Amino acid sequence: MSLLGRMGSSPLYIAVYLFLVMLGNVGNSTVIAVVGQSLLRETGAVRSSDVILVNMAFSNLMVSLARNSLLVFLNKNWCRFMMGVWVWLRSANVWSTFFLSVFHFQTLRRVAPPITNVHGHPGPPRSLIFGLCLIWSLNLIYSIPAFVFSKNGDENSTETLMLVSSTTRPLLGCIWDFPSVYSGLAFATSSMLIHECLPICLMSVTNLGSLLTLYAHGQTRRAANKSQDAPVITRIPAERRAAKVILALNILFILSWGGSVISVNYFNYNRKSSSSSMEFLLIVARIANITFIALSPVVLAVGHRKLRAFLKSVLSRVI
Image 1 (spheres, rainbow, N blue to C red):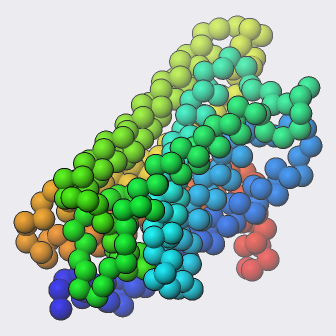
Image 2 (image 1 turned 135 degrees about the horizontal axis):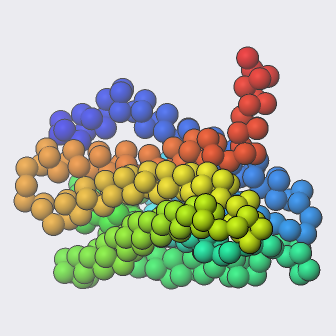
């Protein structure tokens, strides 16, 4: 039996993977329920950051369900459809996480706290809704090749092309079926550069910009008159806490996503290396893919006031 087969069937690997899947499903469902309920109860003004958090948790949950749960109830006739849905969800998940970083950076650059819909329509701002719709619609277009260039593989089919935004093991026996090896590698390369490396680089830039902006606000707070900078003063403690949470989320994302990018693309371009090391990289990619989905609700629970209050109430009842 190959290394991949031995590790993939080992009790430790199965236990760790199932724990991460369950943690991700329960955690992201909790984020959607708690934060979403607070959004529904609010009248008039709506916290845009909470809307983005719910969208990110929803994309995390859909990725986990599509990859680990729904496949149990489907047969191979759903192969191409699920391959396309998986690429769509995985792609939207990347940019939903980046959208949170961009929103916080833009919020920090304002002199005064943002006021949402005090005199306008109830609900989140139209620009926010447009941005989220744009993420999901553009990534649906990006996923079209998965609906077209995939097919049912037989028992002897092997994975000869990996895409970070697609899959690290056969999805309902579905494999990529590009017209040629070169067209497949061209799609994988463009996907890696535009869809995978670009979000990580942009996320790093926006987080650095947020930290520098906070530092500048802190310097202004100490140097300026209190009456002149009251809006900045009231925001700094809360924005620092938010910056720490978002920074932790993005570091977690970069580590997990970056590990998957390195592993899968090394597989794509170095398939002549030893089979044991290549198979081990696929194991690393699988764990890396689920790590962010599983641990991001934990990070949010530490930094989000309403989630902390909910967890404290649950723990007080249990204990």
